[in-house]
Image (tube, rainbow, N blue to C red; front, side, top):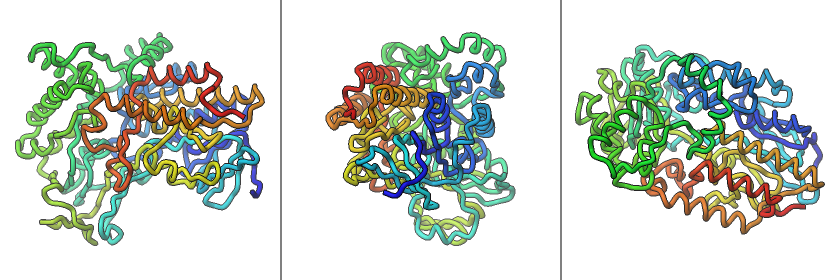
Length: 531
């Protein structure tokens, strides 16, 4: 192999995972180089700049906890932070901890090859530069590979074509325009109310409606903020013991063991409070279909109360299990369909046939558009990893390894790919937990692992094949006890990507996951091959 600049660790990605990995490992004395395809830090918050983009986790929880000074000194302006503020926070962290000097921006890693002789990785960038490292950490994000459906003649559209996951940095003005948006997932639910306020006509093309709960966002309650900051460590510790590492006030009773009036009152209280805590209304919404139906029926009723056209309201009511797709959090989403300039097209009834030079053609109609927005989501969990040519022992590619679905151990390591780690990858809680909490737990585990290897003069770590096989079985066994895998076609299973193997990818349950990771470390990584 040709030589290149050498580091102890190379990290791919400079979002919240990559930034913390750099900081933590550099503090431990490792030489670290980060590669980032964008020209700035922030990951998903760098790319997703569409109007209305904001976090669906409370700002005081969706933030780093590794630095007591940082979390005490940084102040959030809203209950749910908007994208520009989160990006400002990421930039503040990069500057505060002097991270940029070890990040190469505008650099895409093209190939990664494991050198068995030297127990090291060789990486080549798109520009042809070669780098070597003992360890590689993939901080490529769970929702960073845009899904662009193969619409006929998409390249012939002469108007403005946008994807919510790759939004322009400059402000986009929709005033007086005919705008079409394909998709009604989380991004669409945030952006649709914003665009509707500007566009002359907004046509929404919906395949499958999503469940959405109002955010009831507000300015940050400063007394609440002071209260949390006065006990931040205990607050974080308490959250880490919760199912999704979130302060969602879980209810310990079944939806089916109380009266209809009591159940209705609980749902109403959760609806008025807003946010993802609606899923914690009762303890069996994820495992009992009859319980889940009571929650779905409540949301259906709310949609019919909000949307004036009852036929339209019916089309906006999901017929899937509540929670099997990501629960959305919105501001005036359903209210937007009461506007005269907003139309909903059900593409199950009137399918999209092709994109034209001036708009979009369905089976029965033609729509003239000035702007077409693809809110078509992501190739989640695995897409960003598989977009890089990664080759492990004997030239085995990760694409080949994961052909029948992702196989790994702890969601952190892959058999056949030594000294290779993934942060919040498939097989870990990742997208079904507070992401920054999950990121910090993963980075800390990896950092402790690398320190252990260094202290014991070990140069290679690889997951045992049997450990990996048992882990995949465990992840599936836990998921199969819930309604999530079979309740709908979701990106949790890869069902939004044609040809992608359908496997439920996240590990369900943050506390039990952390316990298992800690057990592995406490047992001196006995489930790994160490050299």
